[in-house]
Image (cartoon, rainbow, N blue to C red; front, side):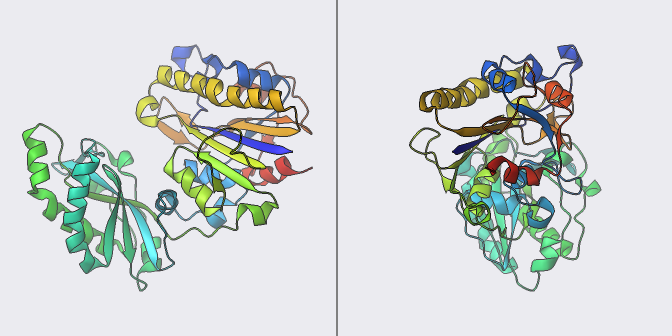
Length: 381
């Protein structure tokens, strides 16, 4: 028996007036998901916990069978793991994003989508002074970076800080979003240092001359200690592999010791196979047409490809198709809602639906909560 778990990140949504009260998933042409749905168990799944962020990495932990309240340490540690960074127990890792300020307002949370080449020059400059804070920046791509602080005396205080994503602060006065916690002063000092160091940097001078937004300072958020997960194989007595597009999902795969696939195709498959396919929020955050296109691409190129493989193999298999979070097109943000799920294959009885959507899954009357317990059921038998 092989097991396949397909995640279309951000696929679930709320009904939209512009779509006559339907969701993008209801409107999208999804023949392969609909075909599976006719023979599958449908349900609404609760991958999130109300006490934690409505985020992909929290949902991912739940899908892989880990209780999020016990194992979630933050976004940055998982994304860092996804890049191959090896975090030790004395380190706290923050997301460290270049942002643009204007009269005290966070006017651009991507610093004009600064290039990786420019960002690396700025990182090199900042790291010269950050050593005094027992900190260093590890570049990722453009405005996205990590800040690693290794200060054993401050580890617990840094981990307990209350921070906020810059995307949430965009367009607002940063004074309304102060850091909260015992180590807030240290981070304020680091932030002030970066603001001074970047103010007249040559990279920013050139960007301003070209009419581009400068990198005014770094914004620190999403921090946490190294995630400590029992390996997927030890926990479930089955070998697993993953293919993921987003850093946090790659980090989840690494942290749970799943094998990384080079490609999503036959020859790479293990007994359990996780695929995460991302709907790019930069494109689809409030663009329902783009979201519909991405759902249709997922159906054709991911679900359709797997259906073809299973038809050819004709061997026992189970398949889950789901969304990690509900991404509201109206709000341009994730919400703590239930996501549609289908479970197809040996042992799962049909719910009698004609299609796969939030509505059809809701009509099934089946709710999977808490979500982290469902993986064991999926792998049973």
